[in-house]
Image (tube, rainbow, N blue to C red; front, side):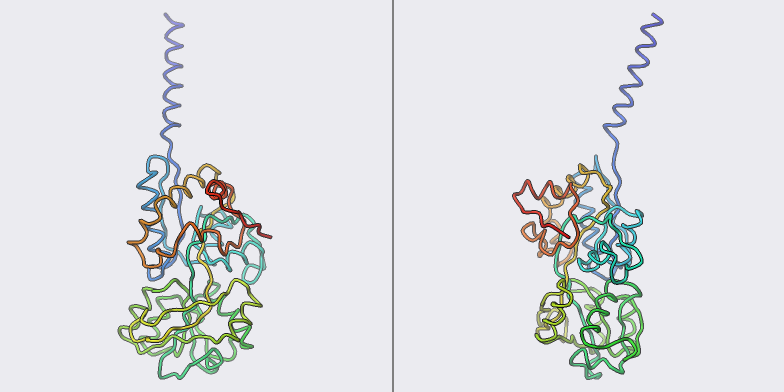
Length: 322
């Protein structure tokens, strides 16, 4: 009886341990952006999709953040599992270039390319800014310090043959940029995001601002220097009072992750997301541009093996990133 009792207890403990393993849940956080941008609502919608379909296996939390450059640092230093980032900023982080020249984050991996993000060069209409060169001598917001926006602005100014010394520069995030416009403390400012950007929708209700575009000659020079910049258009009527199409550089928003996440976890996440992606359409207008067919277009860092497995199952060719 004593031997049987010992065996029974051991079996019970083993069964309990197995049950605990079977019911174990993974937890994952996604770094997004500020509440007035596009990353934040889309990240929340993405978390809702995964939690509703995989809640017994995986719990996802979307967290506010400081967008691309800050998110690259969070992934690179293993402080978060997934994040939104522009493809150009992700590339610079992976290669250790531009704002990441002090350290390359070689643990960055791609999950999906999502949608185009446009450079919004905003200007007060009375400031008479019709192109990048007109920013000389003006009060300009170039994005938060070290942000993806600021990285893009540096690249644009480099191609234009300009530096920050040519103007009075403030380094402000989306919310503070639009607040300064409302107080008429800026002549121009940059925001990079998928239109319509919430902070700009709010701004145009009270401030007389315009969107400033670039010509084909400048766009070609920018693309030749930085291939991630391609020609985009913000349509007329996207923002109240701006009734003309605006030709402007665009990059791609990506979902990225850490290399050390398990292949199974990333595969299941990727599969569940794409099988339910249209649930995002109710969250933000930009979601309609997020499609499986374009999930690898503009990929700038290597794919995570779990994501690659899903795309290969769908018959897609995995780009080679060098």
